[in-house]
Length: 309
Image (tube, rainbow, N blue to C red):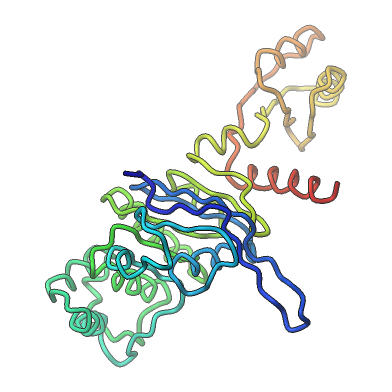
């Protein structure tokens, strides 16, 4: 049996605009999400993330390709897999005059679920102390956490969150981030889409990066970050101009800042040797770890060049 919770092959979605033009939202996407942990689904706004999620949930019909969730073909098998799937894709509709707990009580009753789950999920999303407050008094971050609590009532094995930190203040973002990581650690597979790469890097085990509906990178975060951008070194020393000249003459890419140089080089020893040979001695040489944002910018820059050529 496959270890993949989500698998798509050649998935495409083409819309027809009002001017009878074809708009490609998703193009030949091969998405693979393994069981357990947090998988970041990343890309700028308009890159096809939400469209892909809507197709997986049966809210949009694909133009081409195949999809499987828990090794079951969808949309034909959605009835079998949806009890194991929780999703927050659009703003949920809660009754503003009811408390958070009462809103969840109603959902549990409609879904034929035990009311004992209500307090359990409120605690899971850290809303237990505010459960008796009316929904209309909740902050945006609290409303988002209540929406996630609602999806957790049925104890899903897969949780899909579409841009869960949109519009939140820094505290709200931190709360959602910690909750996502906690859910991933508990054994739930979490697929979280976002255009804020720095946020996802802090919680995700693996990522898929898309642009214009096409896959441009996928894999464990450490692999994607490690392979996507040339290693850089921050170099400080007395004579920055002389050092830049020496390094550039050896065909190393150098960027000058006010009090240091950024040098693209795989081996720090090569930089110190070149400078020492010219009587230049470093006071600091620090490897600068690339992040998902720099990887994304590098990959999309390459992608644009391919499209243009």
